[in-house]
Image (cartoon, rainbow, N blue to C red; front, side, top):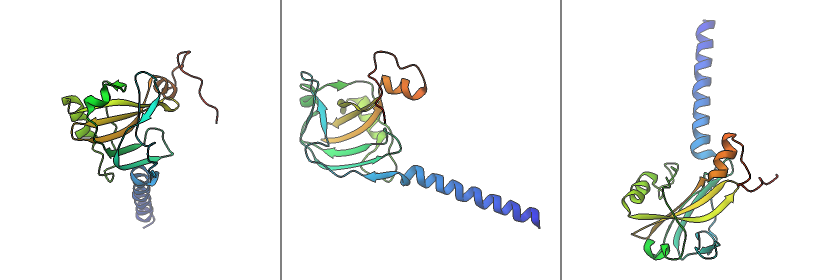
Length: 174
């Protein structure tokens, strides 16, 4: 009887631990980002290398303090990707990161397909929005926009333990 009780306790503990880990990864750390009109969607210009806002509506975003690359956002704009590309820095070969399934407006697979087929274009939003992390903004032909964070070269080196080197800015102190 003691062996069965011990096995049941271990099994229940494993199921509870698994459920808690699942919840924390998918729901627990995320929060809705409060929209800040004129500041939520910014793109880096070619000439000044400074982020400037673009016109947008229907902004939704989530973020988490547990990781600098958990930011995801969706918006709508009247600007065409070709129009944006004339004045802003385009980014090639970016892969959108996935979002939790409950964040309905952001579909990384469809966005990746649109980027590959030319139905969408990606642009540099903000370089080093966090240390080693860039904000990427993609706009589709239909006016849908998506925002996510990616590790840049310095971020990849910093987070995998490689020596960062002189080409990267000094890491901020907490």
